[in-house]
Every structure is written in structure tokens, then in C-alpha cells.
Length: 171
Image (cartoon, rainbow, N blue to C red; front, side, top):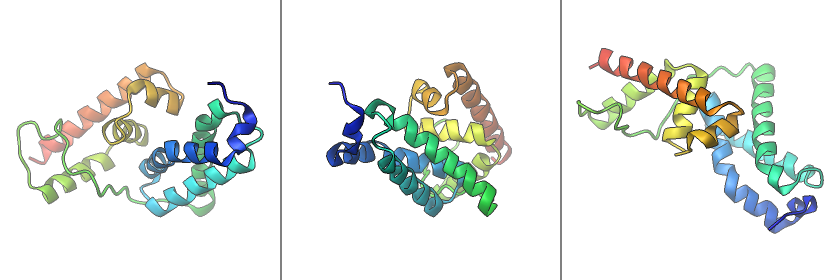
């Protein structure tokens, strides 16, 4: 079914876009900044901007619009508020690739994974978390980040190598 640009202004269509993308956008921003309240605020602001521009944004372009606006809002927040936060990840319990030979207790594993994630570059961390937590395919990640699938594969490979190094060093 084809959608007309004005349909984004229809409340039911806008609500569906919200339910489809709000969680992913919030997590994307959280992975970038490690600050959940900020990620939630910026996600809300991105949807406000979509609503304010609903007549200009066609339904097929809504997802791209939201992620672009969210990323730009994040960059603005960095510039204006000097947001520098330690990366925190409170809901990774266990990752099979990190725990292939050794079984660690929950808290010990969580601390080790957090330590390893902090050592990744932002680009590597985002790709890793979008893949492992959001269960996005490399193709979906490539489209979201506007990079090639090969670039996603390269970042993921480097992230896994780095994570394994950190885990082995701390075993």
C-alpha cells in the first residue's frame, strides 16, 4: 500500500511510526552516549520534530528522518552541553561469544563486558550493540548508519577481536 506524505500527519499513522521506531532510536542514542535520560529526551524531541514536519516528510522517509534528526540532536547536545559520560550498560547479562570456555558469575561477567565495551571505539560499540542487543542484521545496520555492509562487517570483526582480547587478558 502506498502512503501519501500527508498520512504521517494522521494520528494513527504517526502512532504506528512511534511504536515501530521509538525503542530503536532510544537505544541507538543510548549506545552513543551511555545516558538513558538524555537518549529518551532526544528521542522524544525527534518525534516532536517529525510531527512538526509531518506534511514535509513522506511515510517511507519517516524512519530515515527520525534517525537523522536524533543523531543531529545528539551531536548538538554534545556541542552545547559538553556531555562526556562513562558508558554504562546495565542489561547485558551474558554473551555466548565472550563466554565460550569460561563460565563467570553474573556480576563478574557484567563488569567484564562493560570494561570490554568501554575499550571499543564508538563506531565498533554501536555496531556491536545494534547487532547483539537490537538483533539488527548487518544490512539494517548499514542502512541506519549510512555505511556499506562491508564497513559493518569490518567494525564488528574489530569489536569481537577487541572484546576477546579484553576477556582473555582478564581471565
